[in-house]
Image (tube, rainbow, N blue to C red; front, side):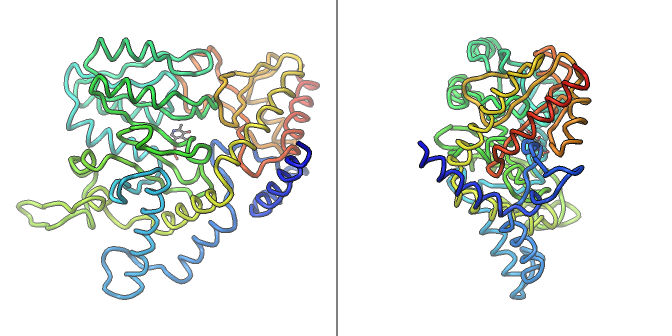
Length: 414
Ligand SMILES: Cc1ncc(COP(=O)(O)O)c(C=O)c1O
């Protein structure tokens, strides 16, 4: 056991030292960055990959006959292949680069949704969904006459499989939208079981994997999902790049999302025709440096070990949960047995925003608010929570800083 912990410390020191942003002080304290569910910091390897791309490989893709343009295209396509391999896609063409999860959901809702939904059809979404997996479906429903219906979750945000079954039996459900991991509470959803139930009733499934990517080894075939959405910046990659995975035959049947260069086969004023996948769904100049950085981030995470990282983050979250439990008036929100390293809490003596401000003064960066999950907050009867979310580089010092900050807030407000 002691030997294990010593190894953990060596592993952690090696990981942490690769993140330059963590070496700074904030408001006179060492930065304790615990807002990783919003976005993670970036390792040197990713920063270097993006900067090297601009220093030596920058050119537009898919167009140039010149060598640099071809090299940029090769780098872009190699990045697509890396993302595909990471989630077990059958072919790189099943990966469409987007700005992130939000754009990926919008793409499916605006293309598959508008083409396939009609009056009386139902899109089911868990009551815990992020706004990014609610609002695009409401827009598609408004345009098609379909309905969006919530599936119940318990007080830990865990999907109620019986309620899902009931909805699937009752309605003409065309698609289930579900996040793999709850960004507000950390709850891991029973996704394979939900997919199996949905498929039994001929409904497709879109998994929002924004929070799963950095914490869980994922295999889209094992889970059986039809679509899955990702954001690189939540998994040590750059902002402004993410991806949509879709089963080839589903993506191949989608109409274009947006029109422009690169997504066409031919353009005439009478009529244009469209390129094959994935170009058909990627109009205009893509974020090549972002894609390169995304792939580097996944390679980097694979190198340190996603399961190792998750185990470490859960251990820190358990320590934080235990410590917070000793501070009077603090209540943990979301106590599911299966969670990633996210701890959400409220205090009966202060509003989360006031707590967040005191923590910031102690150098502790947490997220406060509804976490883009207003329906979930309403279900849990809390206006907001304080959320500490752990990444592979956090250490026990970060947990101590969080607990000291909350204790200081208690002395002020309690
Ligand atoms: C569960 C979940 N879905 C979707 C998103 C949206 O991701 P992005 O803002 O990168 O598009 C987030 C971001 O917080 C999230 O946590």
